[in-house]
Amino acid sequence: MDDSQVIARVREGQTDAFEHIVDRYQLPIVRYLARLTGNNETARDLAQDTFLQAYKSILKTSSELSLKAWLYKIATNNARQFHRRRRLVTFVPLEGRAIADTGADHSPSERTVERMTIEQALLKVDHERRECMVLHYVEGLKYREIGEIVGASEDAIRKRVARGNDEFRNAYQSLEGARR
Image (cartoon, rainbow, N blue to C red; front, side, top):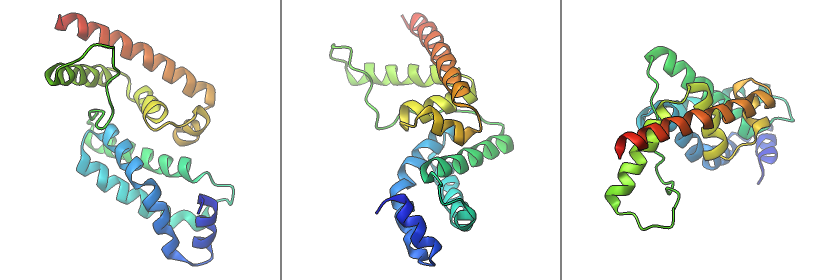
């Protein structure tokens, strides 16, 4: 069943159909929120809030709703609200993501050091740019979808990702140089 069918069923009063939405998007939303908040428990709580808000608001939405973008927008707003309350900006390790293989065999300790270097470099990227980078590279969203989520134009998102890439590259090279 695709998103539009699920939304139609929810609007027809079949509230149990919302379970399909949760099943489909819970893990990606939790992963995304974990990367923005730096805490898996907080991410799960914010994801629960996200789905609760979506459930309460789904009847008020347009029939042309891009469900995925809408859910990420709610999640992004929840993460921003969390950061405003906490004034805490951290980044979670890219769990479950393989580090790019450079052709050489790396020991577990080398991979751990590499992962830590990546995390530290990502922490140095401006929060808005990091948000866009995670949505694009990790969650696989298109610039248009990210623009809908964060409330910016497609061109602005493209620039944020490009500038974020530059910030990350410079931070990573600086950390790599200091490590050697």
